[in-house]
Image (cartoon, rainbow, N blue to C red; front, side):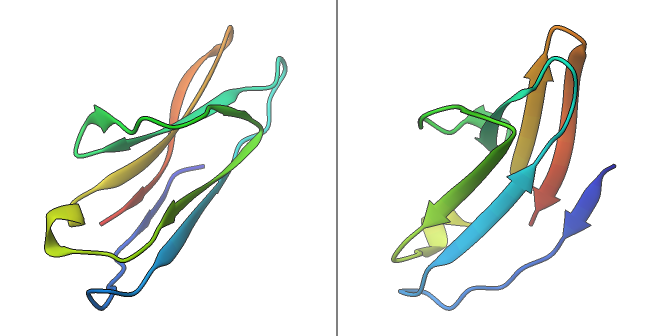
Amino acid sequence: KFHNSKLSVVEGNGIDLNCTALGVPPPVIFWEHDNRVVEMERFVGTSVLILDDVTSNMAGVYTCIASSLAGVSRQAEFK
């Protein structure tokens, strides 16, 4: 299931982006920002991308990606 959301955040505030993916085998979740991998720990099944003290440089498309031996799925986009 693909979910696309437009979110607005006031500069200086924070936001949490949540992603859950189910499958067999359980998928590993990672995030992209404007098609570039966000450097952070990869999680199995669920992940929260925490953006603190947001600036205009952080604007763009954030995509949750779930990957397993069964394939890759883009789970959500937050613009």
